[in-house]
Length: 346
Image (cartoon, rainbow, N blue to C red; front, side, top):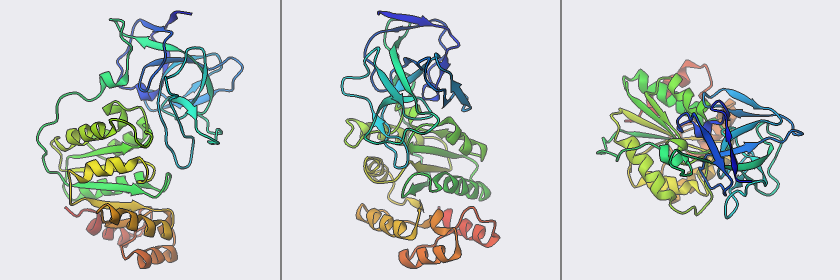
């Protein structure tokens, strides 16, 4: 099997959103590496799966469909984790969709495989450009060297795990900044799995621009010790900090341990006065996060998340951590006023 061709309207997952439309899509049977534009088939006897399309909508992949996605790594605390096998994907072999955005690889250990996007697919080959080169999302990343750092304040959103309200906290900080007259605010979902829907939330609430890992050539999260990750993060931060913005809101996906420490190191080297909002699942998690961050020289300014869902939990979190805690989904105007004073600490 040497390869094949696909129609221009073949289904494409959102990890490829920066890749331009292709009229003639040809793939060849070669190993697929991280970020390569690749063709996959959902076997005819499989169940349908649901992934994110280029537009951010949920898109069904039906049994027998061929679609475009990319090999990649995923490190997740509450869902599927996996990686690209050493040597890349082998044409004709079967792998798994690991994320809504179309990251494909081998699942790790006993990762839960009951998510609607998870499915076993057959790798067909890598898509070629007009000059015969293998297409990779890095070729379509944000281009141009970063300009001078404009010294915009950075508001960093961290979490103790996935699904603890980081995006909710980031949007709340964004809204406060806009209320205070900061007209140009940029959002960066710095680590975590790419998703058009998530960065679109920041745009919906007023961010002039929103970026995630795909914009900087990375299809998803990354394993600990990944070679060159510091350079990728450095370029992403330098680009965002050189933009004409009044503030930068940064959401650090998942938790801030493990591989995410590399990102925090890059950010801390560029900003010593970070304003940090922590989303924590419980009071003990918040206390542990405070201690872990203190060890790398970072201080939390505000705590939110499920640890503030009731008055008792919120009071306990404040007592244990000595840091103001606010429930950002509460309609209490007093809490909103407190956020206005605590979150916008320019």
